[in-house]
Length: 419
Image (cartoon, rainbow, N blue to C red; front, side, top):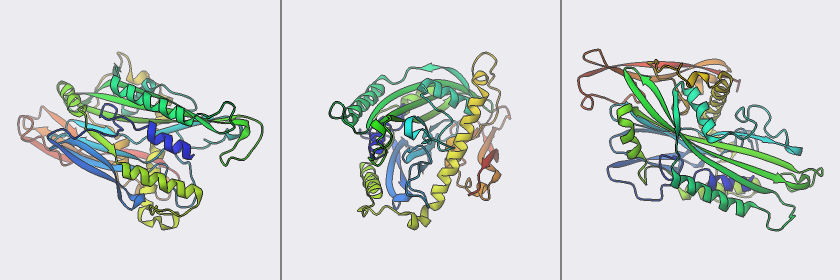
């Protein structure tokens, strides 16, 4: 698992622009930008991810705490072992355009002595490889938007990601032919797609980008996770992680939005100090040694238990929505029969992660309702209207005319298990 954790850090979050979206921005921030910091509550609020976004935009972000230690278990693969990742939404001043980075989805499958590794609802309802382009079609189905067309992925980012995977494969392969140690092989993909939808009277267009990284860990001759010998059977444990960046704007503004956000230095940058501290904490936890970086142990996690529970609630909701998209099929988002007639914006995974009331709705189990606030704007003529994700957005002085607002909510039913 340490090998897997180290490789995820190297492979899954390699990009540098919002086109890829999950990256280390290794160039200076462009002019006319602001920065926000996402902190890690499980590491004493250590600064974790820095996000660069256009000046004057509104920002809200949080850390999706997948992969951290739970309150009662020594090591819990509740999410197929993905690590903490940043989730955010940046919204234009008028509230019409936005850029989102979603929580990471994870799924897996296994064979041999580890065939039950992914039992239950630990992972997404997928049990085999999924191409990044197909994954975006599932995402479009969940959003209820029209899947307009495949979009070429950024060639430079794709090449960079593939190079990192090649280097990781060279590092994780057995050093000698026939060596009886676990080995890992990574495959990575980057894909993009254009989608369309309506926001009130505004015709909107968006770009979805997905990064899918899959690893296959082979345990030869029944070697288990502790290095002990088992049955003489090779076991393979496969795991996939999928990261999505979603940006959208009125149709005539999308090209400018993409150019603005795809500049080098824009988007998220995972801080090296945080990455190193987390790696040291995990090594200490697995090795049962003292932790030099002060990782909060299970019995000391009261200050961030709500954050951890919130992530688990988000993961369950993500699982349910993804399963629903698979069951419904792709027909409702593709083809001439689809009409962009919706006037309201359905909550997505970023809404769920940023909604602090989600945990409260699950207490005691059963069915709850998550109320996602929206700001409904109408111009003076009554002929133009839209919903704003950001309650602080204001089209007055940005869009022509005089606008008035009325705050409302979008209700989303949540099935949950008792805590």
